[in-house]
Length: 586
Image (cartoon, rainbow, N blue to C red; front, top):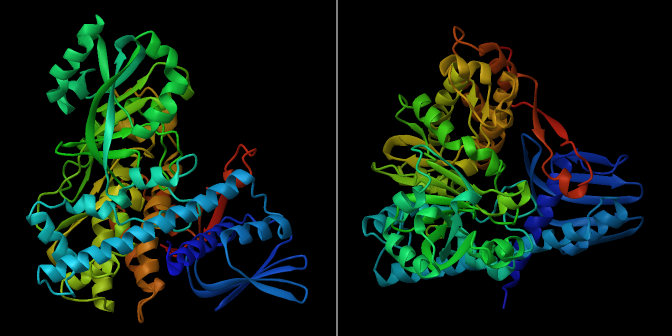
């Protein structure tokens, strides 16, 4: 039986996220009047009014709401008690075109959150019981507990932190899992539920697969990732009258294997172009459920799943990632002299040779498993603003407590200063010297937190990279990319992409979290970030003026990610502008 408070919390969460997204992305019907006051938001369309109680508001139209949403028409006023009721009112009274499909997805998101919250409470209960049994202090700090587990080989700190990201993107009303994946499948395949996932191993004929690798080894998965499977695969395939050296290994997600492969590739199986095998490899889901951490292996794999992952704002297209191994090597060179920032190596990418839609349905890339072997804890950056089940504080607050300082004005300033300097300085250098911007959103970054505010960053993936080809080619004159049009952009677009991901989708989350505490202001924290960027920009190197224009201009831009769900017929993505909290005359 679902506890009432869990159901209400999940339902309110989706209600508030939906409303915040509609406001932020300006998706209300023309003629809608939105009136803001310090503690209330009033949304009026003709005779229909919605009232929302506001706790606080942050930059980029980020609201924190509380209490019930109130709907009024004439003298009739009532509280909205469910996502379903809110959808009906928005559709019928505010002319918001929420389709039946979108309605089901919003409800599915609410139901996914319910399961995540239930499991989180269960984890807290189990941890409390284990602490009592082991006679550990009830007020044990999360980082102390995490290091205790890691030292005893119980779990990896990074993989544990992946399971703490229950909320998804704060301003995205649709959770990372979408229909047609069932609730049971969500519980099997997402990181929050910490399940071992058995990935089917398939074989694709060499004439039906395209590969790209850093060492020209088309058998990279067999030779480097699962060499222990060679004899088993050989014993399986030889009785069929086939030779293993004419096939390439493809690791597949079990949901994709069950629901999609037979649908699209039945003829391939009958003609022995594609061979199912009885073999699987153990893995755990990461924050992005399409990327799986291979247990007891130094690799992660990113696999096709025919469910859109909107937990991340990165591109997700295997076909355009044929250049990934080459770009990975370039990035290794760019950041080779920076000891505090690295990019995960992607040595291998593969997809089947078919039409574009089908090629994307059967694809796999290999990433080096991110790791930092130094004192401290390595965690997913997204987990920083999520609650942990040990001391039930947000992870970032637990870190400041672990340092012995607690959450004070001084400790927060120190943290933001160290964090933004370590992250931003090498990223700005990469733009000035190479014209390259990585996706620096929270979802794409892993952070190592050590003693005395020591930090290191690892970028998970190169999806979402943007490149100013003229600048990059000055450093790599013989560079040839297959899909350079996908990555290339004007230098202003490159800088804008970095601003969007690192400020709006990363540092803004930390600032929003910390400003709930007395004496800590947005102006003060963004002032620190502003100074870090100003110091990092070298006026004697290329693109300094563009960097200042984008980072310190009066307005910044973002894309309307939710517009597509309301108006799928619109080809162009809507661009929205916000006041820039880093605005400066410099």
